[in-house]
Length: 277
Image (cartoon, rainbow, N blue to C red; front, side, top):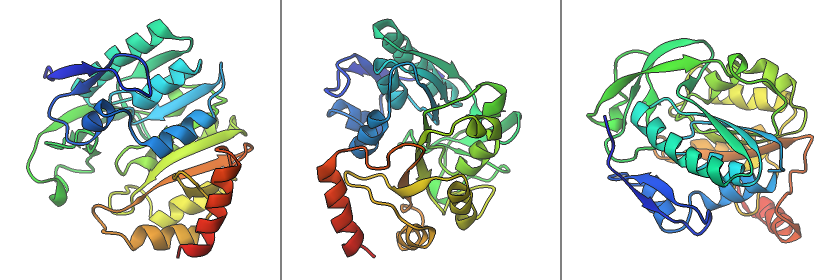
């Protein structure tokens, strides 16, 4: 499948970037200037030249490109074949501009090596979900499924890693389960993770949060003014949302400053911590 694409030049990159035609979410946002502004700001705040970055669920390569342009060494994972093709071309352009370098792994980060099928969204081409069986999630409606490769991060990457981004549409726990060696080798680590209880596979939502706390992460929401949150507060806010459309983008650090966006963001975060349930 050869996707229809076009090139844009988003302000946040100053680089030609290829987006998918027909995508209803990621492509239009990038064309208008950038993707996930709060997450991108937190991501960039922890990038230092020469650091290793993992981008699990890279899609067309936005976060990986940010890291390459900041001088980092990036391992990007994207399993959907036609999306990986676009990602590869974007990373080729980023590598040419440098000063960092990205390697693309055309597989899904998982707890084991093997194969699986993934359900593709007809419009939101960032919402593609690995299936445990053959049944598509009912909220996705009709659509195509394709076979993909699975791989353990530990089999492809050696630590330490400074920044870890995981947005795998419900496979976050399984991705973490396949990287114990990388995690153990990375005492200074910033994390961006999609926390979507509805789609989470392999563990209960509270188990995932317990694991991250046991790993030493201070967690909060990935916003313009994040503040540290306990497990119960994260769960309460995530589960109060629409189960299908809800969920939270989480931000966490261990061995690195949690407040990385400056004093103003820290003070705003303290104010928000007092007002939010």
